[in-house]
Structures are given as C-alpha cells and as structure tokens.
Image 1 (cartoon, rainbow, N blue to C red):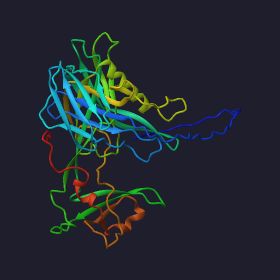
Image 2: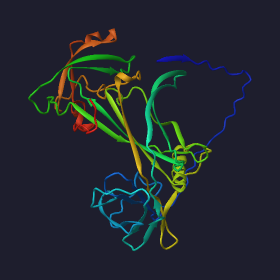
Image 3: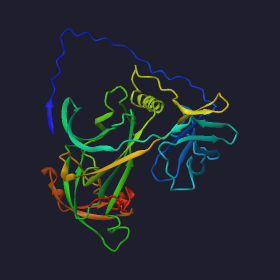
Length: 408
C-alpha cells in the first residue's frame, strides 16, 4: 500500500469568512393517507410470478419499510388470454401456486390489484422484450485513493465489468442485477488476530487453537466449519445506448470490491443478470438512481415520490413502484484469492478475547504463540478464549449447504 504525503499551502492574505448555518427541521404533519407501493417483475426464468405490496409511511416514522398489504386480490393477465392468480405468502409478497411458470418473450403482461376497500389498480400493458446474451463478465484490479489524517493512501480494489451488444439494435435500454456468493471457513488450527489497544499502536497475535471435541457447546465439528454467504445487489445498474450508433455495452462497471474484507479471501463468485427495459421503465429507474445517489448536499435534488406504470382505475389515485417484465440472460464467473493481489482478511480475524466471563459459554480456546509488538511478548503462552458462537459456527453467517453451482 503506497502512502503519499500531501502538503497543504495556504496564502498569507487568505480572508476567512465565517457564517452561521442553522439546521432547519420542517414540521411535517402526519398523514392518514397511505399510498400503495408495488414491486413486481416477471422474467422468462422458471419460478412463480411474484409481486410485493406495502404502504407508504410518514417521514418521521421510526421504520425503514412500509407496512405490508396482506388482503389484496392480485392477478396478472397476458395478451394470450391467460390469467394468473397470486396468493398472499408473507411480508407483503404474493405469488402463484405454479412454481414452474415462465414469462414468454413477445407476450404482453398486465398487473391488476384490488385492495380490501374495493380500490382497483392496474399497470399499463408491458411487453416482454428479448434480451441478447452477455458477451463477457471480467474483473480488473484498480488503484483508488482514500485520505486519512492528511495522507493519500493508494489501495487495490477489484472492479467487475460486463460487455454486451445487440446486433439487431433493438435493446437500447439495459439493466443488470447481480448476486454474490463467497466461501467462509472458521479457523481450525491457528488464527491471527489484530489487537487495537487504547494506549498504543495496533499489533497482531497468533493463536494456536485447541478444540474441546465431544462437547457440543465448546467443540468444533465439520458442520460448522465451511459455509457460503450469498447477497443480492442493491445498486441500480442501468445504461442507455439509444443515442449510440451501435447498440453495445463495453467495460460497464457493475461492482467494486474494497480491500480488507472477507469476500475475496478464499473464493468468490458473481452471477450477473441482464435485462432489457422499455424507455418508460428506464426513465423510472433513472429517477430512482438520481434520488438515491444525489441526496444530502445543499444543491441536490429534493427527494420526491416516483410514480411508474401503475394507476388507480378511478383516474385519481396513483401507486408508487413498478411492474415490469423482461427476458433475462445470465453469466457467472469465479474469482480465487490466488487470482488477485487485493488485500483481504478472514471473516473471523477479530474473534476472541483474553478475559472471559466464565459464566458464559466458552466455545473453544487457544494459546498465544506469537506477538508482533515486542512490548506485549509476555502474552505468549496465555490462553485466548473464544466466547462467541459466530466465531466458531459459520452457519451464523451463511449456510453450510454447498451451492449447486460451486466450483472447487
């Protein structure tokens, strides 16, 4: 890691102007009116059709998500005369009983919702577009600079890119999602642990682990040793080629992985999903992206409600959210720790403590064998107790069921 000193030079005749800025907290009255929020997507992948319904909530409410709607009648129609009834499952989700459904490219789909007060909502008819295959998914190490205590610190990150093109020139508006999966292993023989004392610089100790086998609470077994963690993407990844002479996507960054985290420590996999959007849905996602990425500054856009393609049949009310359909193409790649130079760390590097409360469960212990700072050499030979289930059972973090797609 390269460190570069930055020298700040200030002119002698610099005039400093001080001003007071008073935080403004508007008095926003609570509202009894709730707006329906819809999340619905159909693809040509095998699976049930799913739609999620919830209600908006007040700005100052102590919650992150709206209350789920559980009593609506939800149906999807297509232009071939088919009707798909969706039944309530849980947490606002509705889905079809048939779990082997597939959307058909070229067909048009319409969502219809009737709430328990008789209000009816309907989406505009949405055509399922075909989408071209992904040409390639690949990664590159890039140097990024962060600033810490007046220093510029260069670090290696891993960026993941996608290339695609449509020879027919029909796509024009693109969207991607991805799903990350990585392997984690609890320590079995020894572990290096970073210590950050209040009275000095940080240092590292090496602990030789000793397991109490045969004791379920304090022992180790192979069901707790190796797991896989899977997380969906949270970013809005869209791109338009409508103004280009060629319908082509090159070197589009879909993910950036920072150093000093556990994703790349053993083996990592990313599944990229590619969709085609209509112009209207592209504009909807673009607005959401702008509001999500440009809030907090004095001159940022003011967040507002973003309506998509769902309206109330009374011609007055509207629903937030979206209903969209698209064919999907996927591509998966694997990245091993041996393939990269990005600095990583084990998910369990920070486990353990010296002086446990003996009344608590102690899962296993070890003996300190090395200390990087000579000041703490007296710690060698001391027992190092591990009192957290998270540290010894990887199932707390992920699942020990090996994914079907996983490569050794």
